[in-house]
Amino acid sequence: MSDKFAQVQGIIAEQLDIPVDKISLESNLLEDLEADSLDIIELVMAFEEEFDMKIPDEDLEKIKTVADIIEALG
Image 1 (cartoon, helix red, strand yellow):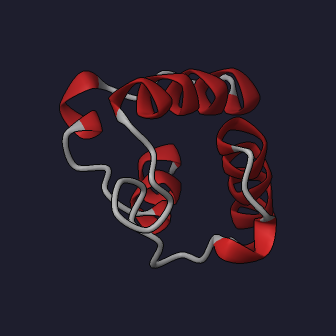
Image 2 (cartoon, rainbow, N blue to C red):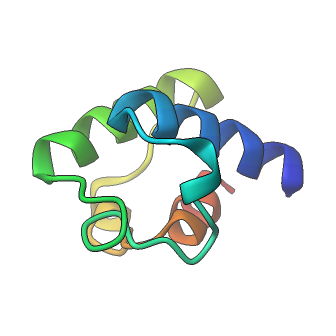
């Protein structure tokens, strides 16, 4: 899981232009990392491209934290 976390962390840092060390598994995308709804869509697209998979729409509603992203990616 640490490799996947590092990849997710790197994508979030790049997309939101924030330092990697601000991103933990417990980080809330909206509250802690100050992402807006457009940021979330762009992040999901980046994760889908990086991990070559599709995150189902019904799972998107459940994604609130970095840990939720890792869980959705399997």
